Image (tube, rainbow, N blue to C red; front, side):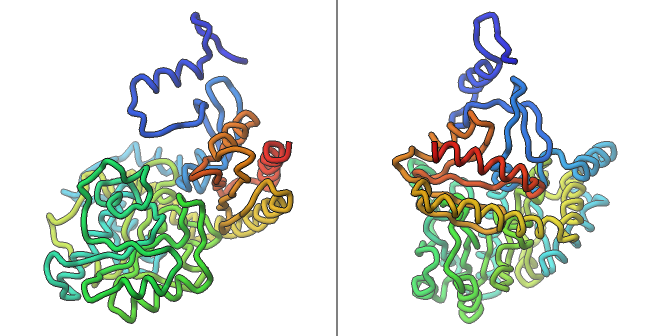
Length: 409
């Protein structure tokens, strides 16, 4: 039942008005105020339920309030939550060891957010370039892809091609070369003696869940190995089960030199990110050269350890594969109607280009909201679907039915 204030507005309207009045407008949320959530479903302050088909941009791969993750967090809350890295704590070694093993790597540098991890990867690559590769001081360059999204720090937006993310934040950090995504010839031409790394998303999420051409990642791996350049895979959104594999790079049998991880690593409970690589690469750091007060804190490590245990069973990767095949088959049927012009993605991750005649991605998302389905638009008329990996097939079908209602009225 709708709750009215003395002014005649709903609880939703009051909360949104307060948020608009007292928070910076760096986001444009859909007009819904969530009060609780469980699994793949969320409930707003009015008691209305919604199917979450965004999953916190893949931070909630295991759904809202997964009992194993909540139990791990609660147990750690009673013990110790923060020591800083000035001291050792009893969850740190296990977290680093088990994450390195999952990645097939040797060393881990834990941070908090995805953007922090990308910044860490950039610093790592540059230092490796100077100390190991022998690039002249101050000359290191990193090749990145157009339409990338790696975060919003000053350095990261310096190599963004999205005007909305980049405009008015200069002067920009030099040292980056942008090439078209999926173009091996352009990548090859951009790499020179001062190139220390190639930084890519195996699937570009913010750009609309863009999957590169077959063989692209294999080609990147071969090219970087041949030219003595690090291959850095930003798997912050694509990793940890989302695409049906632990890492999206696995779809081409590729192992990069460095993984950049985040989002689902914290289980949707706490922010956890990490850079994972070899001893040769991460071993370039010395005490005092890089760090974070909260990076690798006991609470983060406790939750992260439970995430790793859940991933080791393979259950969530298998669910993403099976349910993803089902989802994509249903979505592809919409292209025959003309309502959807393209469907892309892997596993439980899809980008839909909606016929612009039907509206923008924002308006489509708003229409879906009124039917109890939460999705997020990206550029133009594109919307993204990334449901929690715990979603049931019945709930997935319910969500697709709501999509049909909006696109095929």
